[in-house]
Amino acid sequence: MDISAITGEELNAVEFVQDYLQLRFDEPLLTFYAWPHLLFSEYSLAYGEPEYRNALCALIGEKVEDATLEEGDSLTLKFENDTVIALSLREEDLDGPQAGAFSPTGLVADLEEF
Image (cartoon, rainbow, N blue to C red; front, top):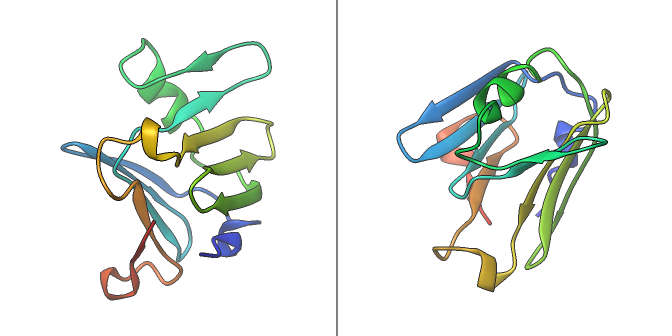
């Protein structure tokens, strides 16, 4: 699956929906069913750690420099401020059959799960 449509897009919204996360861009929508890690130059944050949600929300307004999804391995979003959102897609790291979904148009009808 190609998520490169997010490259160059500005993050418009971070939505915490019960037990999953959605990142909204101008059109694209990226949904995480598993909680990604936030990687900074000197530390990282995982779901449940203090400041995790604040750090995600601080990315609103930032542009994505690079977006890659390697099936069965990882999904990474690198922002222009060098923050990285990373999610392992290795089977042993996931709790369910899908780790998330992507819609290039933002429409639910166009969602493709990964």
